[in-house]
Image (cartoon, rainbow, N blue to C red):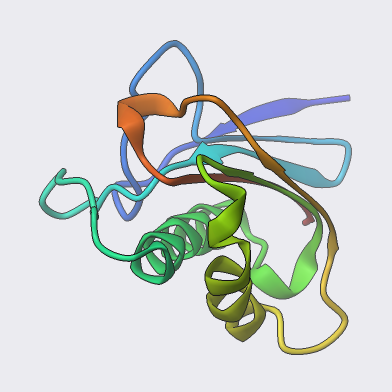
Length: 126
């Protein structure tokens, strides 16, 4: 089975020893994305809906580069700094998966990189 690194300037560069995504076995495994604007490199620090939108834009860009799309996502994990943000996050998230949404887990965590409010990772079919 072959394994390939996915990299795009349309999403933030990795901030550690990891790839934006890896393709293997007919799937794309996207690393967790946080709300960084890839053009400016700045964090999006507004409401959780804005942070969620930026994270999903980043994931979408990575998936497109890999030859996939948001429509082919099969599993998502959402990490929230505050589970009280769940409803607002979910409202923005639902816009990206209007029908047949992927399987998903959403959990509250003690802390996220750069102290952001959200991180999302995804697995999609190629």
